[in-house]
Length: 365
Ligand SMILES: Cc1ncc(COP(=O)(O)O)c(C=O)c1O
Image (tube, rainbow, N blue to C red):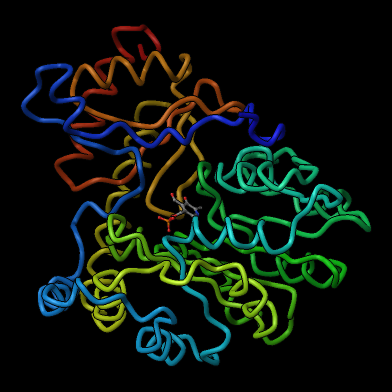
C-alpha cells in the first residue's frame, strides 16, 4: 500500500504528555501539566449542568448545523448566522480551510514558528509552504506581504501567536489587510483572544465588514475550558463560510459539546474569573522571570515562552522528574520552553522547581 507521497514524512501530532502516563512512569503522586494551554480552573458550572441535562440524548445524532448554538454565538458576536461554522475544535476548521482552498498548485504563507497544524494540513494538501521568520517573536507582516504571489491562496496569522504569545497590533493588522490582494484568504487564528488585555489588540470580528477575505478562528478549548469536548468555530463572510461548509463532515460537533459551548457563552462570570486568574498568573510568571534574569516574550494568551539558556529538551526532562510537564522543542527557539499559566499553586511550584533546576545547572548564579 502506498500512501500519498507528500504525507510520508509527516510526524504524528505529539500532544503534551498526559498526566497519568507521567505519574505511572515516574512513580509520582502529584504531577502538574503546564503544557497544553488549558484552563487550570476548569469550565463553567453552567456548561456542566447543560451537559448533564443532555446526557440521556446520546443515542440521537447531534444537530449537524449547530442551529441553537449558532444563534447564540451570532447574537453575541453581532454577525449573521451564515457567517459562522463549527468544527471539532478549531483544528478542524484549519483542516477544512486547507481542504477547501489548497491544491498542489497553490502557495500558502505562515510564520516559521507558529501553531503546527497550519503547516501540517497544508502539507497534506501538497501546497507550497512559504515560512517567514518571526521578528523578535512577532509576525513580520511586511515580509509576509512580500512573500505573497499570484499563487498564494491562504496566509496564516496566529494572534496571539502560539508559541511566542505575541500579538499583532491594530494599526499594523489593518495596514496589512489593506495591502493584501483580495484573492488571498487571511486566516486570523484567535484561539487565545479572550485572554488579551492589551489596548492595541483588535478583535478580528470588528474587521470583517471591511475585509471580506478574512476568516477568524476561535475555540472553546482555551478560556472556556472545554478542551476535551472538541469544539471551535470560524467566522467570516457568508460565501467563505459556505465554501468551508462544503467540505465539513456532517456531524463534526457532538451533542455535549454544543450544549456546553452554548451555556459557556452565557456565563460571563466564569469568563471574567478565568481571564482575571490568567492575568494574575501572567504577572506572577513575568515578574519571576524578571527576578531570575530570564529573557521571555510577554505573554498575551495563557502561556509564556521563556529562554532557559539550556537545550529545552534537557529542562523538559529535569522538570518532568519533578512532576511538571512543560512544552519544549521549538525549532527556532532551541533553548526556550513554553509554560502555560496554571493555578496559583502550580505557578509557584513551577517557578520554585525551575529556579532549582537552573541553579543546579549554573544557569542562574
Ligand atoms: C493557536 C491555536 N489555534 C488552534 C488551536 C486548536 O485548538 P482546538 O482544536 O482545541 O480548538 C490551538 C491549540 O492549542 C492553538 O494554540
